[in-house]
Image 1 (cartoon, helix red, strand yellow):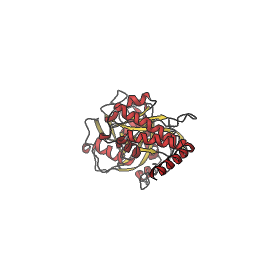
Image 2 (cartoon, rainbow, N blue to C red):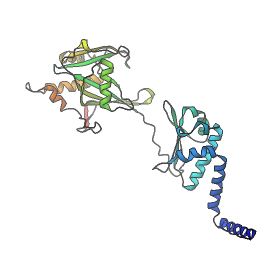
Image 3 (spheres, rainbow, N blue to C red):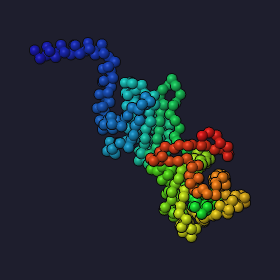
Length: 326
């Protein structure tokens, strides 16, 4: 009786397999793949993520070292997995994050059509465009760096200027504003406060808002440099002798009266960004009435920060001293 039922079920299964050959073909291939690559299969299940653009994102940072046996074996398994997923639903592109300890897979993936996308301190990004009907829609890796500048003034009509130890123009005699780059975990407001503390040692500074924007391109590594110059106010009690200069980066830091700063401009002894920022400062001050607090007037001319410092309003862009839009 058992043999009879077994033969009958086998016959029915063969008929069903004939009618559903495509489904069983995929299933058999998948089961064969799973048996062959049992260790890395758990990684592929958890780290193959479909994105909203019809592609697959893979992060090798989730790969346990015990599951990684050999670079060739991994790349072979990776390629088979892509083919299997693509059979289920076509993939437009696949991107992969490769930690530096697995960098040996890069030449193999490169030979298989993957392109380098970016390199960070601890990982490398690669991608492969698979959709043959349209051109690659994967954007370039971010090519801008964000900087900040601090236009530091007080109610005595003084402004802080510095001379850097290292400058692009080879002329470190020129005076400029405190500047620096925004770090990964910062916004523009926090970065400005940090740079003021690091470069000249002023801890209590009020960052009122953005005075102007400056863009330079290309700079090193073909990056675009966008710098947010912020109007900052400090106490009158702070003098030049109170400034704690970072000697690794600066030669000198000093409070200048506005008249002295104007003289520096006339002698062409300031960087271009400093010339623009000071001229705008003086334009506003010259229009102030004698009974007006000039700091209050200056604060009405900044691009203000909202309470959460994420939204900007009253936006105005200038390029070569010409207003573009607001």
